Image (cartoon, rainbow, N blue to C red; front, top):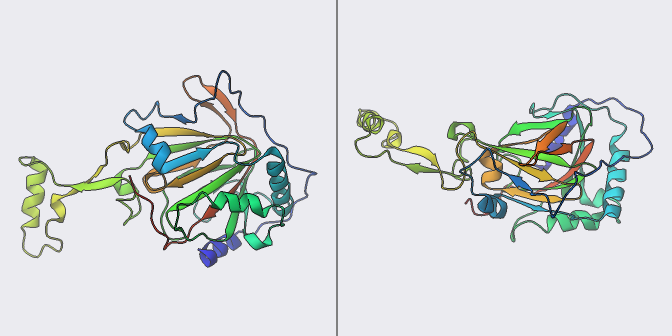
Amino acid sequence: MRRGLGRMLGRARLARAPCSSSPRPAVEPRRGAGSLALYDATAAPSVDLPLMASKWLRVQEDFITREEEKALALYFHERLCGQQYSEGHWDSVIVSYRETLMAWEELPAALRPAVERLASLFEPGAQVQRKVHAIDLSESHGRIDGHVDSVKFCGEHVIGLCLLSPAVMRFKRAAPDEVHAGTEERAGYVKVKPQAGDAAGAAAASATDAPGDMAPGAATTEWVAAPGTGAPGETVDVLLRRRSAYVMYGVGRFGYEHAVLGGVQRFGPEEVKVRRRRRISLIVRDEADSALAPVV
């Protein structure tokens, strides 16, 4: 991960750009009576939201103070403001962005406690990468398009911290053939055999009886979604407020295409307006050989 992601960050040749005086935080959506719900699964009736919230995606609001947000945002603003926003990413996922990857030890001493506190959200036993990945999305049309994660560059967990602007993160349930090979179980899919008498199952069974079959019995099983993990195509929206931290792993990473939406979104049954302005996120990861969290 250290060398791999670093090389990818270095591929973009970015021009220098003038820096403005300081980053401007966005106004949060009105909370109204009580607290605005963080999860909206109106387009995913089969999703078990309590399960998702506890095992795939945890959000902790007000994880840092306003003063910490201001200090972190100003530091990364000054570090990144000499770059132009890039319109294309090496994996075609991020649009209108700039980014940097740096070791914790490179951070000013006053900022390290916030990053170390963020890393404390990892599961016990995780081998934490002592790197922080900062992604700056432009206000005009910056976004992260939907994608499922692989395990090539990090382990089970991704932990993020949201600065300057609220955002809506959208999760869309991926079909078994849309997840990365070898991650099907982490993506919340289980292998089952077709019911007896099922025509497709009978055809598959006869195919496995053919001479020279390279994978006996393989055609008699298929991947189906585990209970509560959602059906392919269902979506769940999650509200990420300024200063909130999120922990994403298991089914949320490997079984759902996840995206950070740009522009103005309507969130929840009350269609609360969420205007995504310039957003800086700080991301920490664990090593690929870390102890894995439960899948479901």
